[in-house]
Image (tube, rainbow, N blue to C red; front, side):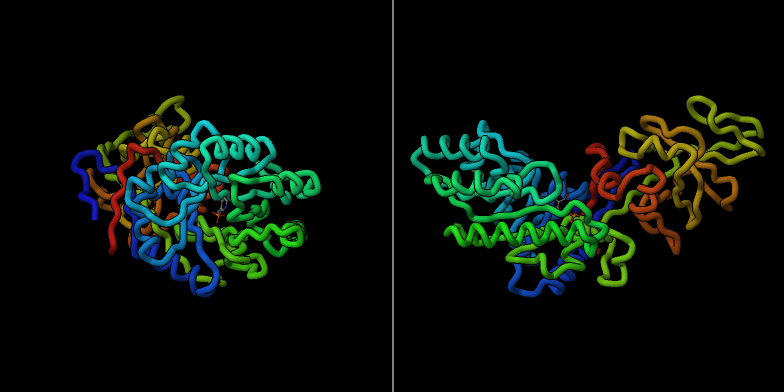
Length: 377
Ligand SMILES: Cc1ncc(COP(=O)(O)O)c(C=O)c1O
C-alpha cells in the first residue's frame, strides 16, 4: 500500500485485488499447462509496472512482456526475476544491458538477426531470442511469405538460440473473423515448417487478450494477455464470456466552485457559454495529466454519484465541470474521472469513445505526474 500523497488530489488508485482476480480468470481459461506472459509494457498499461508485475508474479504469471529495454530494466530493478521479453524492437547497441539484466530480445528481420548474432558471437556467448513472424500485422516481423529465405539464415545461427516464436493478431475485436483465422493458419504452418526443418522453439505464442478469451486454438505454449489483466474487455461482445474487474480508477477533487450568471464564458475560446445561472466546478486535472483535450464539451465526470458534463475546453492543468444540476456540491468534493462513484460509473471504453480512441490509449496516456496509489482492497 502506497501512502496517499498530500496536496494536489488528482491521482489514480490501482486495485491490486482486481488485478489478481483478472489473472486468475486468465489461468482458469487457459489451464495449468499453458504459460502466461503478462503484458506490462507502457508502465503496465499505465497502472505502474513494478507493482503490477510483483502482484502478477505472486499470482503465477510465468513471465512479462515489455516494449523497451528500459521497461525491462525497471522490472529487474524492482526485483522481478521471471523471464522478460522485450517485444517492440531490438537495438544491438543495448546488448550489454540485455545481458546484464537477463532480458530476452526479439529478432524480427534479417538485419536484427545478423547484427545480434555477430555481436553475441563476438563475445563468445550465447543468447536466447524469440522470433517474431508477421502474419498480417504489417509491422515488425519476418514476413511469413518469405520463409524460404529467412529459414536458411536461422539454420546458420550459432550464438542465438531460438527459445520462442510468435506473431500478433491485427483484429483483436473480431477473433472469429476470416482475417484472424487466416493469421492463425499462417502461423501454424510456419511453426510446422520450422519444426520440420529441425527448429522447435519451446515457447510458441500468439494469443492476445481477445484470443485468450475466445480462441483456444491460438494458445500454443503461452498466451500474452494485456488489456484483460487490467479489467477491460477487448470488445464489449466478450463481456459474457469472462468476468473481469477494472483495476484503475482516476479521481480528483473540486479545487474551486463558483456561481456565475447566464452568459458567462468558460475556458479558452469561449466554446461554452452558460445559458442560466450556473455552478461551475474547477478540477485540478488537464491534458498534461492525460485528460484528453478531446473531452472538451464532450466528456463527463462523477460528482456526488451523478454525471457532470465538461464545460468548455480542457486546459493543460485544469478542467471545468457544469455541476448546476447536482445538489449540495461543495468545494473539495471527490470527482471520479474514471471508475465508480456510488452506482455511477465511467469506464475507460466510455472515455475512449468521447476522445475518439481506444481504452488502451486512455490508460497509457495518464501522465507520470499523476500518482498511482496501489492498494489491495
Ligand atoms: C506483441 C503483443 N502481444 C500482446 C499484446 C497484448 O494485447 P492485448 O492488450 O490486446 O491483450 C500486445 C499489445 O499491444 C502486443 O503488442
